[in-house]
Image 1 (spheres, rainbow, N blue to C red):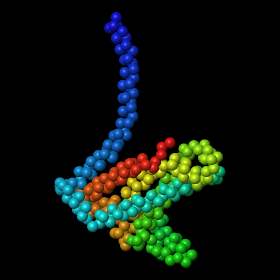
Image 2 (cartoon, rainbow, N blue to C red):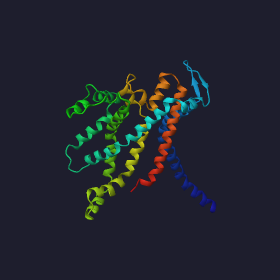
Image 3 (tube, rainbow, N blue to C red):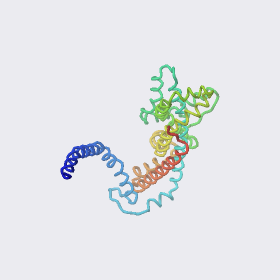
Length: 309
């Protein structure tokens, strides 16, 4: 009798086990392309870069194991400290675009605003514009002889500079362009965050006598903090990887080019123009570690100021 009951229970459990196995199979089958793509296009290049950082390459593609020689040269190279400083300066100043993006998002999210789709398109247009086109336009705007910025300044009696030809202003001129390009993308994220804040919180605050400023700091800013954290992480990572704008806007003939190189631009010079692929790989590995450490620090610090409703 007990054997018959056990066989009946096993027979009832068999369809459920098959269904569970099928769900596991199709689940793994669905994520397999993504896992394969991550492995081939992200993880494998990282492994290769780490290996290449311990080698030296010849012009004919042969590699020789040199141990930590590339890293010793990296930490004693005169250009590297300046490039690292420029990279940090760019990444930190890029964060200044976040308050501007919040302001733009709040204005575009305002009730009763006409032509809102047009304004959103205008602000998002720099995001989808090719960096080469952006660089050409801003090179003209920044030109010290016939640029539009200096022309407008001359109308109010101010003598402009050669903004991207002077080492003291060139990097900050690129920061302005980077912020201009990122405002539209960040504003879209902040608009989504603003639309997720319940309206009844503002209504309750108004009944309690809270004005717009107090509502912003007591309701909007805390509930928008997850979006601010997300954008700040992306901004820092993007700032540490800055290459295209500086490369396209400056040019090697620019007197500010040598003093305003970032780490990625210096990596490009070493690895692809001078052929020092092992040395360039060491620079890429160090930059990856710096980015990883800063991201971990940001994730640790977000526990103190990010509020998840």
